Image 1 (tube, rainbow over the protein chains, first blue to last red):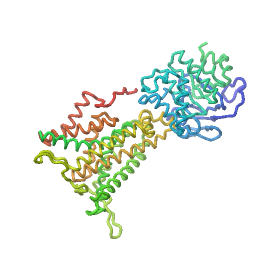
Image 2: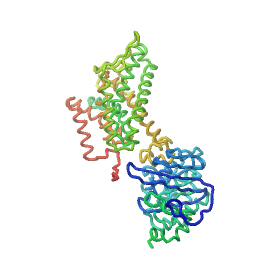
Image 3: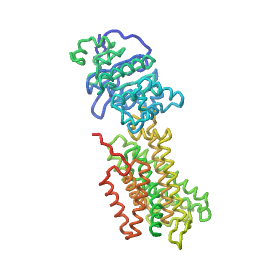
Image 4: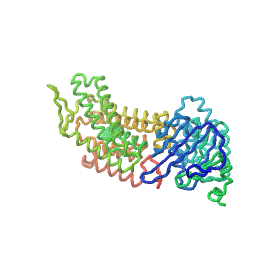
Length: 251
Length: 315
């Protein structure tokens, strides 16, 4: 079965839609990064976006979170059109984006980074509680709460980036390559925590080069190739598909 | 010995004025990584606003406490507005462009202000005439704070003037206030986040445009205050004063480590002392040579400034 040029595998479990992206196009000057992609994330769902370098994964996340203005298309969050809204206006609508390169404020302490994640919240007591929750997820951060973030290792910075994104109590979490450059053990920890976070009702849109990990976690997945969606399907079915195995799992 | 003490007092006094201007440079650099070369000229505009207000108040009330307060308020509020307009219409559209573009724009605004103010432009509304641009001739700045000797030691060996104490007090209070603002408030952590990475700061929900605009307005208001203190000391106002004082304050900010708030103040005080000693013991012709020589020496030994931290440039 195909939908436009996209090969669609299997059946998607129906869910109430949270994020809907329609015909999204992104250009950087004359360079077209996305040629009109359509995808969705349901409430409580983990959706993975996989693809090789330069396929447009990061551009998709950036357009969704308002970091770049789309050249065309429509983005709907919980039923409201949010196309072209600036990132600071999407945070109060429940979106949190842990960006490419982690985006840690290295000049601030671990705790200050977390508090900035809760910048728009006024419920001080609850913010403190949420910071403690993050510290319980990643105890290594608790030991370093007063330390400058610049002293953290790559894995600890990734943990901080995810924790900081959780501090705004998002309904939709956008993650850009959380496994990049990290030791396998650390990656395991991070993916275990993502599953737990999802279990608490947070929907996740996950961009990954590590297709195996991402699809194993995801309810649904999309394969992006040079700015276009090549395939879509439930995580397990994509994992089992010969094309994906050949192109992304090195078989 | 008493000469030496007197030089220290005078040096600290002129240093505090540099410090207030340098704080504006360093704050704007802190959030935008932009050397706002128009900063000194914004200060000059503030002095003219104060001059105009003093003129309107007249001789009687301009030196009363309320009069002085009003003069400072008008100048500082006017400059905050000017800073907002400059940021909104000159710098914000260039924020995603290479940094050099904004830097050259800053130089352009500096020239536009310092040379624009040399035009004579008087508007006639019926019988009233309103001076819109003052012209190139220097004007005497009114004595809004009457210079009095506050402390006299020995046979006038060492004299501390009231305006010296007042400007030192204002500079220290503002520095402490800024330091508290930056490190103890929500707005301060937003500033530090924007300073490090404004794109990621926006992802936290921080309204980055508003943070940057507010920083500009604060810096410009500080400059206006500093300019008035300078004009009170120098008793003159002219359109090119901003270029001169601004350049000195920029040197002070770089010596202290640009982007570093206490660094700017220490750099400014050192520069003030250094100049004063040179003028006192050699000749006033050497003043600027020594100021810039000091800058070169600091940059050779510590390019990041006295308090700055070396940051590896990302390529």
